[in-house]
Amino acid sequence: MTSNDNDHRGLLPAGLADLLPPDAAREARAIDIAIERFAAFGYERVKPPLVEFEESLLGGPGAALAPQTFRLMDPVSQRMMGVRPDMTVQVARIAVTRLKHEPRPLRLSYGGNVIRVRGGALKPERQFAQVGTELIGVDSAEADAEAVLLAVDALRAIGVAELSVDLNLPTLVAAVGAGLKLPADTLRRVRRALDRKDEGGIAKALGDAKRAIDVFTGLLRAAGPAERGIAGLTSLKLPAAAAAEAARLSEVVKLIHAADEDLPLTLDPVEYRGLEYQTGVSFSVFALRGRHELARGGRYSAGYPEDGVSEPATGFTLYMDAVLQASEAPAARPRLFLPPGTPWRDAGPWQTKGYAVVRGVIAADDPRAEAKRLLCSHALIDKEAVPL
Image 1 (cartoon, rainbow, N blue to C red):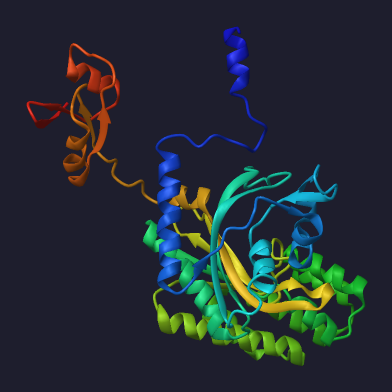
Image 2 (image 1 turned 90 degrees about the vertical axis):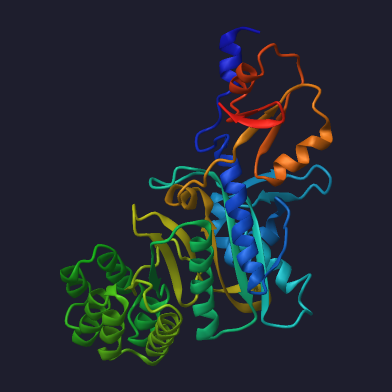
């Protein structure tokens, strides 16, 4: 085999990458910290399979991710299967099937890798680690606030101190449109104008419907700091269903501020892109430095509404690649070289002191040089850990 052949072996498909030292260890440590914080709040871990039957994986909220799902034929059952593009739908399936008799609310956590057909402009990775929680079987403002606060708690524990939360109501525009009895084509034009933050486009789409123009323009102007945005929403003459959604969001903001008054909260009530299967209060968590999106979550229907099997739920996912970029790398553990012939039992005391022990397994004339070659920070010489 030539050197060029070896080089080609290292090539990977676009959007896929090897995670090398020390990043692989950092990610594993961050996942462990997050799962432990979830457990401290009563969330129990589940582990769904990497591949599932297509009808299970892409049912219910999973339908929104069908274009991002790799499919393959199961040679055993001769049925189509999908490789998970997201773990939320799997945890929801577990809740409404295997754990359907467990008391509600049901608190579950998870961690694992997902893969998608294509990446995006801002997130080109196609395989990445997801870690998160689902709170299933209850529809309340307290549950919505818990999801936000737990995501923030986990990120802080990992080492991302400065955070902000952007709150959304992805179903609000549809609720307003239904309440005002707008034709579907008109609502689509309004939606495009909202996406462009174009007040003139809203007026053009709605013609002489002054009330509708005032409402949708007010929704657009409500974006910004949460308290100001809530005040703006409250002042609007919203249809009943939309007013109920706005009131729910207001309650969630109050609960979050009561728990963490210094947490920056913003609001964008017309944002829905990337939140297609959300059914209520939703959110993204950002690092103030760099504005990485570290987490996303919100309310949805767990299970398979098309089959009449669903429960109210809320939850979130941490995007570990972004989390690692936004957090400080922990101090590296010192590596201690033990010369060949050092008894195995002698490693324990040094490990207790915080060293990673690297045992020599081949003869070396110069233990210091061998230790440096193996990227050690110390070498055991005369029973002492000597810095190099």
